[in-house]
Image (tube, rainbow, N blue to C red; front, side, top):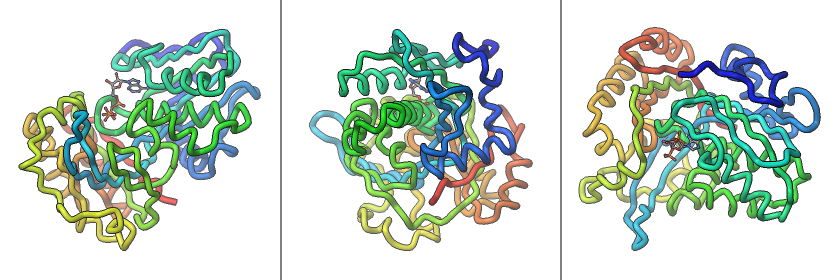
Length: 328
Ligand code: ATP
């Protein structure tokens, strides 16, 4: 990976904005995330905003069917977790730019954050630009929604900076044009998503949990997973409905399921090995997130989770994180 450097205009930031990930910084990012944008910590001056941009995990993902346009309809239960990228916005630039010093993430127009910013400016016919700097910590193409989260952070940050000209509904309309998972990140809480992921309902009934996240070292394309999905072989409970998730969800073992796991684990059997390892270390349950290959274990005891994390980190080439569900 190339050395991280601060782009022009960001020189006053810490050399690694991902210092957010260590100790009190993660605590601050979590608090900022929970408190809402008014309390997001700012560096420097008024024209700069630093936004914690969390990962998500899918606790349930059922593929309901395929639409005539080729998109798959799903029902999924998502939760943000306390694993953050840091998105820095420097407002009022002559052009919009996006820089992310990570080898797997495109700079500029191909970055989802760029698309979010241009759609925002287009919607308001504002002739302005923003410089976006992303410190990438969330593993890329790993089923954790990092790109969508970054795009949502840009939309929220811009809307806040310009005095909230767009309503939540209008912001959501832009978000869905960037990607199906982007509207979820605007909600900032666990949610049930239907349609292609854009029909959202907040879910109030998820209990706090510690999360041990294990990411094996390969990228998975979501498009590839859906292309290889055999709907006849999906096995998540057929009768699951929205309303199920508006009841008691304290027993996570009752409902955790992911229809996409058979495809990704078929190609990467290591996913099942990671699940087994997490269960052996005391996880209540373990599952692949989204299209994978990340696997998470849920723990009702923070202490057991910490011990599991200590034991599993450094194994093979797995990247591991200790986090928590960001439930209100
Ligand atoms: P999805 O399920 O939406 O594909 P994911 O969580 O599996 O998401 P991401 O980390 O969002 O994966 O990355 C998916 C692809 O999007 C990557 O191949 C990456 O090159 C591209 N991408 C564009 N912008 C970003 C961004 N800001 N952060 C991460 N990836 C980005």
